[in-house]
Length: 613
Picture 1 (cartoon, rainbow, N blue to C red):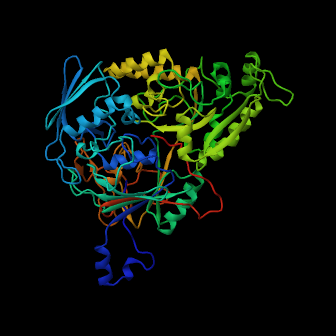
Picture 2 (picture 1 turned 45 degrees about the horizontal axis):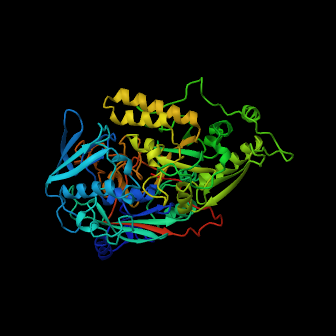
Picture 3 (picture 1 turned 90 degrees about the vertical axis):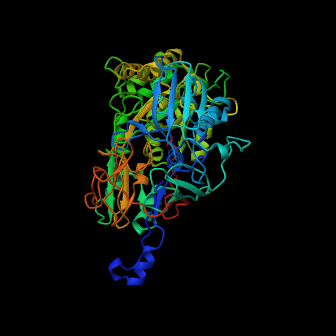
């Protein structure tokens, strides 16, 4: 969440009188952020979407966090730790004198409560349960010592992306999966004070934040139904910062002297899910996917008929990279590319040949028939508010028509897409995730254990893959502490996933961001070299947001301490059209996410919720 500096519209600052300038200086400093994705939940045990987790990362701190400079784990609520020789016992030493936003002390009992809830309540394990699935026990042996015992060695213990909640608040909740009350009690640089669904989220600076208060008093996240409306709001000064711009919007803003731009490599992959037969975590079939898609031959033909290069060029205007492996190429240690002997090249003739050979003959109308003689009619679930889905959908429908598959595009709201894909109620679906620097989380999405229960809780599935070879490799990588050996296992997993064809990666889009120069000096980027402002793997961009005239923009060292060098690109350096990283300033202590129905454009393009964390 970011803080926004509110600048009066109208006369320039130089025209203001001294009393007017004094009055303006006493106004809260507010960062207004335009967002185009609905919030699935503000419950830290439940939220999985990009915008929801972005807010929660700013409201709740973690045992460790990914550094601003290079995204390596560094101390946060836990200031030090050690592990036993067998790597089955981890002892974390909590930072002292840390308080919750309501003034109550934060102790080892709070992470113990958080983790034990995830171990004992399926609902609490919905978003991040894979991190604790191999844990034996969690105990606070005193106020500042946390002991976690695992069943097997676990290489991800310093990369636990789990928000720590206050026991004195959450222990009173009868339903751990319910939406929280506001204002929320948190430990991050901002606290959520108000939430109006499909309108806004407001956050306020946490005066008790242990790293020190931010430079901004409030952050307002304002929801717009599409990116056209969000960009118009940026140009008119209604918001200060936006991301997820389309290539056309980004290029159009290059000539605007009042706007600074950021073109950053992203940690996101985009995919088409192919339902192989959805089931619960105990193997009971769920959903209404077309049973023909259980045939790997059909899935392979579909994958062969999707052209990543065309989508990169036509949908993203070149602001993306062509598809390779499951882990985005920005994470070079784990990124994988299919070798030539198994690589699928886009080839409609080959896809048709594969279907002919597999016995899917064409009917009189050119639509192929399944093994029971029924036409292969498939649904492609899309996010109604996503520019990517809107523009890529016709290409995919057309290519699959060329191989004899009748595909109907079905736009749905963000929330509906999330519900349908979790319940297995789809044939094909647009999806995508923001990967972490440690790939374990996105890898876990494809395991048998990460499938939900019959109520759609207790897990977060992606493609509903359930494959023994993949699961065995997942267990191996989790226990491997040698970085090179672990990276090799992760690449083997990506090959298995590629060969099973339960999903098709179709590209990695850049993060296209823009902010108003008059409002902010800049923001700390993550990573510092060419990174992003919003949707970081942490809170650095919003915490270090620097209002115009209050620079320099800070950076944060390997211990998370604020410095004044290497923070990112200031307003002076990041002029309009710049493709380097930017640093935004925040004014005030409240973060507000405002969800405003985008009525500024005749095109009723709905926003994407395909962005899951």
